[in-house]
Length: 84
Image (cartoon, rainbow, N blue to C red):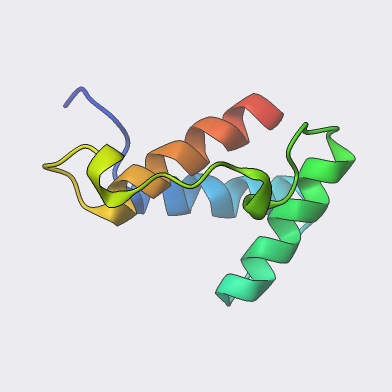
């Protein structure tokens, strides 16, 4: 078994399973995903429910070596786990 952060595929599978468990339809577009994330964050009492509430990180601040999708997927998976 490999160690390290989850793959993008694993994060999508986790998100789909969590949506199913919560009785939510998995979003098909970015806009639908943003709306669902915001609604779930508000329901959970998240201090910054809107993605715009998060501070912008410049390209330089990002770590190199991993794709943007992998970084975002890992962050989303961790956040989903915390919120549930």
